[in-house]
Image 1: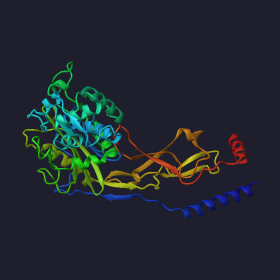
Image 2 (image 1 turned 60 degrees about the horizontal axis):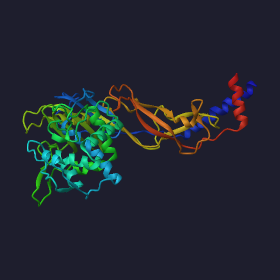
Image 3 (image 1 turned 180 degrees about the horizontal axis):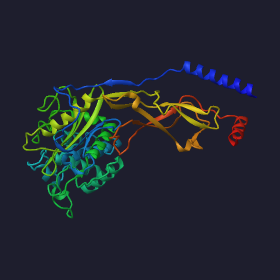
Image 4 (image 1 turned 30 degrees about the horizontal axis):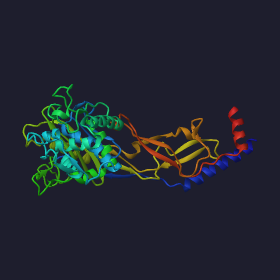
Length: 442
């Protein structure tokens, strides 16, 4: 018996060494990305009440200051409204060439020259597309209110949809009174009679980032409009208005910066909110989202919000590198899973989708690891229950970075990527299962 055990152990060792010799190590791709500035800073002295920078795909937090504090967001509200407008367009409820008739209450808001607007006339019709463009490029308050009514029927019904959508997206601490971001008093009859006139929409920088990441994932075409620096509204008509984007970081505008490829998204300004900006840049295929809340706004020409955005963006691109995993790659800690009643006691797993993570320049790729969570319906005794088909998705790899204090949006330290088995997990025959049961008793 002792001799037989030695032979078996020898065979196991030989097979293991042979298999190891055939295996190919998959190394994630690491790329450094820099937006070089005159001086590279390893910190951000952000002169704003709150701010956050995140990866646009995973929501990995790269910088944060008071990012969970709910504050007035002013016209950055419009990104939530636009999310619902795009939902309506994609579902067929609205069409781009559909014309919307302006009611007197919306026209009154639109004609207030103290606010950002295009001149909408009561009883006149404007296309969904032109109102959408005016809302994003020129932050036209009447235009987004008209779109909200077109989507939901009434301003208050649209606010209800906004609240529901915010909750669905994971925005945690929101107050919403209208579609545009003005105070309850400024929207007149579109507002609420039982709410203070000074009340305005509030949520946190993290919530704004959550919204923006979701918007860019689901409707990336929004950038085709937010990147437009200048455009005419209703050119050739009595309502013609030359619109210049309030995002001065766009190419050709006053706060543009050649090394940061900014193509969106939305500003917001009010007495209570100061100057706000949700920005996005795509350098070398690495898109980030930044939010600045309550920067200085000493005059209409104050560019503080954009200067603070540039600080955050430059900090990220100058001090981080990305580590990319492709579909089919493996991540340390999630390379295999235990099986139940299968021929093999473990099954090899690989990522079903690619994923990109950011690590500081002083970190290494081996700091990235994962744990696997199996789908409950595929498990028994906390293991993968055979049989399972080849390439079947069996769960998720919960990927994290050692020492990371910021984590990801949603107050989680991991990002989840589906994993699949590389070959069929076949059920062991009755004799093998009986033998294992006997062995387990001893």
